[in-house]
Length: 238
Ligand SMILES: *Cc1c(COP(=O)(O)O)cnc(C)c1O
Image (cartoon, rainbow, N blue to C red; front, top):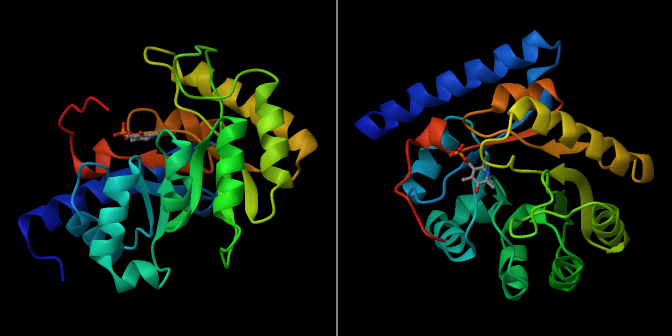
């Protein structure tokens, strides 16, 4: 039962995010069930994940392995029972692939061949495939995450070829100050080019608290929402 103050906050925030998603879907004639809400719970405690789970949010996003692993352990049996689906959305360090593969349902941030190789090795023993999104760059800035140009298809190809990795589609974080409308239109084009080679890779992970409407308009199947659900995060320097 959710009867505390924090619980009431999460109920209200989730209601408003779900309403935004529903409105965004209706506006373009899409079915709300085709868009997965991933609650990005980084910096927030496992108790918030438990509350959201009670409210029917089963997809949870984290961006740091150590923090994610801690919450998975804290939530214990419910997570282990596979009720929650953990989505790793942060920058991938290859030496963390084995750890991430130990709890994650999906990794949204595979942007290089060495990361594919690390995950391909890490998933050999898994009972179910690890879902993988190729993170793409929308501005070609090499300092930021995301595959650029022909790299996108090379990374997708490597994921598709790896047993126990399941190529789901593409992911992007629009550049700061970019027009989200243009950014998600570009992501949709990149998605189409990947689907031309890999018809199964239909997923598009795009859209965060500020721009989920534009993402849904351009075909996002997964939105990764933190602030609008959980509140403003303390600034971090990771
Ligand atoms: C933190 C984070 C989000 C959530 O962003 P909000 O603006 O808080 O909704 C989404 N995607 C990634 C990759 C993130 O790191």
